[in-house]
Length: 317
Image 1 (tube, rainbow, N blue to C red):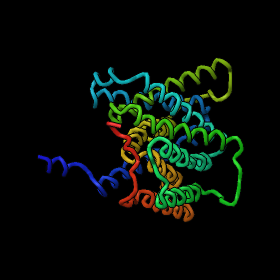
Image 2: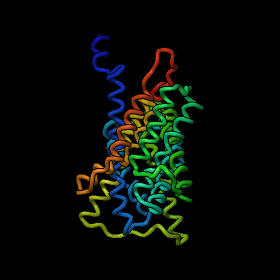
Image 3: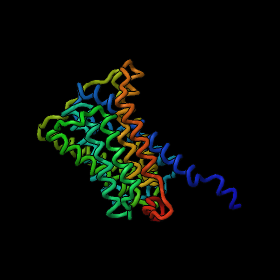
Image 4: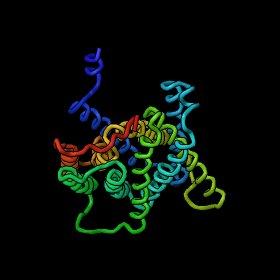
């Protein structure tokens, strides 16, 4: 009986490969949102766009959660914790990151998001017993360099002004929210964790939109969507947010926020591949960045027998 159970469960190298594929899928889906947002921001304000995006995402995720986990698990979910985590971690993070893209461009927003591994590693060192081994530190450095190259950054200099402050804050909130989701809601499935926290983020975004609208502040304009506009909006809401977040939380629960966040730096490379299909050009610098990033992810996960594993983030933690 035990042999049957073991054969159906990825272990060791197989489990690591499976977990990394989950994160790759999450970030590849997430990357589709940057070109879509670039199109939509031409006629939509960042506050109205992020609000519409997360409302549509929750409209997909909640029915799926009800069908897969059942109504009783949804009703009995730890709603107070989930809503608080979602509002603080993902609500603020999603708004700030889109504001950064509106202030700059998709590449700059992706580059600023590349600081997330720093926040994630600090959280693991502080709370999960992560040790800064030589392999992990070397992998982290490769990931950061690869992320900058993948984003097309000029490593010789450049400033982002207030955008980098907002973007770095968004990265911190995303890292905290991702870790807190799997650590603070261990009794829930990954889909339940992702959906319940996103409902909290939705409440925060709707409240923010209402405040901006009431005060007459900029950022709440919207426009009618034709067939092309709806295809971009649904890509942005369902692919790049709803499905991406479900895979992302599952990946974080398996790898930890530190390693999982390394995959985020590949987003600009995936954006390049998407644009390549749409008629864009190939960039060898970004391809090199993606290769360095992949090498860093592998190196960071290379364990020695004497290394202490960080505390698992999944159920039972």
